[in-house]
Length: 591
Image 1 (cartoon, rainbow, N blue to C red):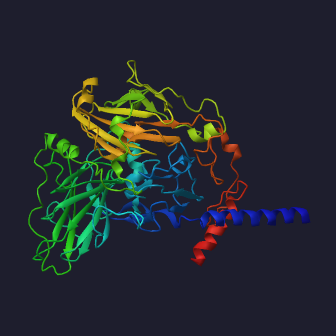
Image 2: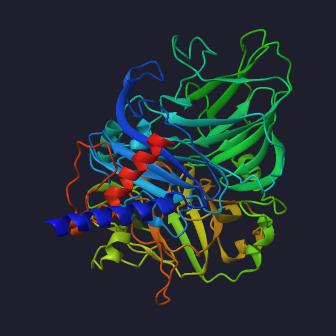
Image 3: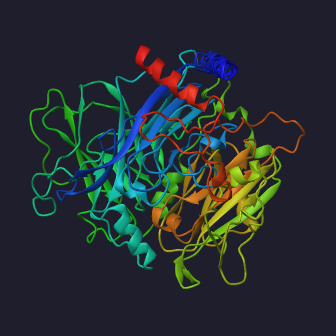
């Protein structure tokens, strides 16, 4: 008994020492505690169930700096499983923290789990959100900032303020009702509105906007320049963002500094993030409209699906009034929008997260090692169910996450047979994964054969957007590629009846989700994963499985119960996990 106690105390000391040496390492740690729960809110004037974090909707902004360690303790007080993913955060060598079903078992109701990752060699504007069960349609999202280190210059002067703006289409029905609609094989229909930072539209029109709706107001000082970071966190609608009488100087998108160009408005597609430098150079005769309006739809029908906030100068003399600033006049022609997208270029002379110029990586001169032509089509029926497909395959989430199955050599969890070109036979439902080559250079062409806009996202990477065009992609389309300063980002739009080509340097080992960001099609199976394994013996290119890893599926027998009476992140699976959580709580109390 005494020997056992001595061992436990020795283990306690060792674990605390190891944890503190990690937590107090050279790279600082930023810590957050997120409690996910339901609240009742009325963003469009109608009470509804919303997913809040710490009682707030949207959730808190994660504010970090390049190479910081980010620790987020998530307590799930929902009535269903939960996972949080960090859109655009590359999780270098650490897909264990990615927060999607291909890599992580979900956090059960009443449980805690702690994410612990480093924002290695990144800067920029991102957001996080719940990745399961269509939950993002009810909230649970927030902004994510990675600031550059002070020793690395930025290609613009420090702004007077840093402002997060989360825009997105919104339904009054909650995510469970929306799921039921999709499960019944029906489309979701037109959204009920557009939110700006979780709030409904300013009453710019008495007919379209009911009274007593809370709207977003951004307060600014005249003459100053602000960095405004805008993310489209919605369900499936592309939005045009603009601020009345103000130019949007584009500076960065999803971690890449851009060639700085002024826009009067910019189309921001689902899942995309941009940051603008906006100078408050107008007179203060009145406030100004901030607008996020639906694109590529019948504007007369969708007029009420418009988000409107207020830009308020400290010396403003009156309220905003009159008509909203006009959107681009190309309702039935996407050429203007595609040309606008092509104009977004990488600033190859600016430093990024490191002192070397971004453009020092000459992606245009690297030999492509593998090519995937990935085509989506309108929804199909497979085995009596409405499904969405990529290249004829509708992805089935595995009961045992792919990364966990690899770790424990679980057979039959998935297939490494995702096709390089679309299937010619009938569509099928499979857990089919792309077999990527470590240190390979992959070309992916997204072919959108639907009538609606899509956005595609890759976890674990920033890819180079090298080409867009209408019609069917062919080998000759490569002649139009931008091989010098195509923007590097994690989410790209693919226009209806068109294609977008990206290049990905496969240097990040792990299991990485490749998906549409349109939640309806994602929910119905429009995704896959890229599996990257370093074949070298005794390689050190991936971080070990976290001590608090959850187990499910074929490995569920390995999961030991969590004491849900404790507000800690501990899953009592042995080792130092419980000590890490306790020490983290102590540190949060001290600091």
